[in-house]
Length: 118
Image (cartoon, rainbow, N blue to C red; front, side, top):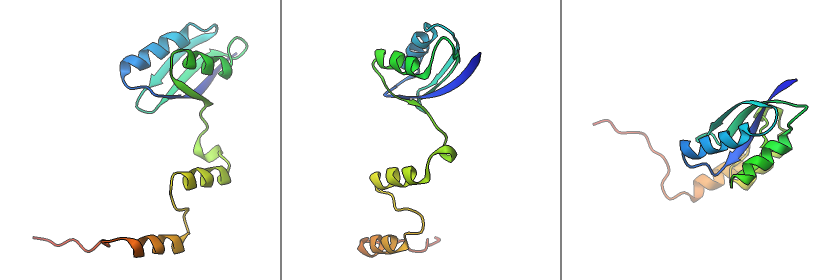
C-alpha cells in the first residue's frame, strides 16, 4: 500500500545536496518517488508503508549528514499551545497581547510615521 510522507530535512544548501538525499532515499525498499526541496527544507516521499516507515526515511536522511525531525505536520493539525510555545521561543508576541506590543513600541527609538510624498 503506497503512502505519501512529507519529512523535514534541515541543512540543505543547494539543489545538488537535495539530489543526493533524493538518491539515497530512493535506495530504501518500497520507495517509488522522492522530491526534495532544499529551499523549503522538506522531502515528499511516496513509499510502500509495509516496507519502509518514517523512521527509516529519517535515518536515511541523517546518514546523508542532514538533520531530520521526522514527518512534517501542517499548522492546522498542530496543537495550539505548541505553536504558542514555539512563537514564544522565537521571540514573537502572541496575537492579542497588546500590552506587550505597546511596551515594545514605547521602547522603540523611532516609531513609524506617515510616508512623505515628494
